[in-house]
Length: 200
Length: 200
Image 1 (cartoon, each protein chain N blue to C red):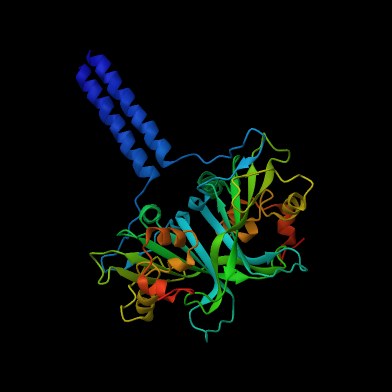
Image 2 (cartoon, rainbow over the protein chains, first blue to last red):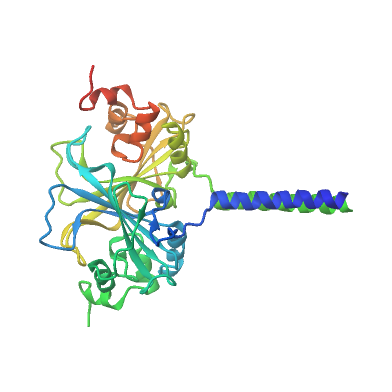
C-alpha cells in the first residue's frame, strides 16, 4: 500500500516536472504542412532579436516609395548554440519581418519608428536532412500563416551563399553575433577576404 | 522505512521541480546596489523586443553627426502581463539601447544597419514601492554595468508622463503592443485626445 502511494506520488511529481519543462521551454522547430509548406511560428516575436535595418538594400539602383524597417529574430535554441559555438545548429529558424516606417507621429518630429502590421515575412530555415544545401527560404505574404519554399534558383540562395559571413547567413549585420563568430573562427573565408583591411 | 524512502524521493522530486522552474524561467526583476544604483540586466538581449527606431527625435531642432538606431526590450514577465491586461505590472523593466547605424558595408548599398557595441542604454523601471511616481529612469554610459537614477527633475519624466500612450511609456511606438492597449482600453485619455482624427 505504502509502495503504491509512494509510486503514485513519484509518478505524479515526475508528471509535474515534465509539464513544467514543456510549458517553460517549448522547443522551437520548423513545422511543415503535408504539402511541404512551412508554418509561420506563431510566437516568433518572443524569440531572440538579432537586429533591425532601415531601408537596407543590396542593390544600389533600388528605389522605394516608402521607408521600411526589417527586424530579424532567431529561435532561442539556435541562439544558445551560437553563443557557445559561433555556428548555427540544425533546425535554426531566422525570421525576417518587414514593417512600415513612419516619420512624424505622436511627438516624434524626426527620424522614423515602426508602425502597423508586418508587410511581409521571410523565414530562413536550416533543416539538414530536408533541404539540398541544408537551408531553405520561405516567403510569407502579409497575414499568411503558411508559405511555399522559395525555389533554389532564386537569387536569395546564391547571394547568401556568396556573401553570408557565417553558413549562408548575414551575421555581419547582427552586432551581438559577429564578435562571437570572429572569436570562434567561424567567419567564412570568402567573407573575411571581402572585409575592409583584409590582407591577402 | 518505506515512508522515509517515499518522502525522500518526493522531496528530491520536488527539488527537481523547483530547480527546473528556476533554470527555465528565471524571474527578471530590478536589482539595485547598496547605494541605490540599478544593475544593468546582463541578459536583456534575450528579453522580448518591442521595436526599434531610426534617428528618432522629439525635438525638431535636434541635429546629429551620425545615424543611430534605438532598440527597446522588455522583461518577459512584463510582456506576458501586458498581453493579457494591456497594463504594465510592478517590476516592469524597459531597456532602450542605442546603436550606431552604418550605411555602406559588406554588400549593403543603401539604407542602414546596426553595428558595434551599444553607445548607451537607458532603463525605465516600474517599482511601485520604491519610486515616487512608481517609475524611474537610469542612464548607463557605454560599458557601464550600474547607473544612478536620473533625477525626477529631468525632462524625460514630464515628457513620458504627458505623452506616453500607456502609464508613462511610449506604447504608441511599439507596433505589437498598441493594438492590445487599444483593445483593452488602457490608452491614456491625454494620448487619445492627441491622436489624429480624435473627436472631442
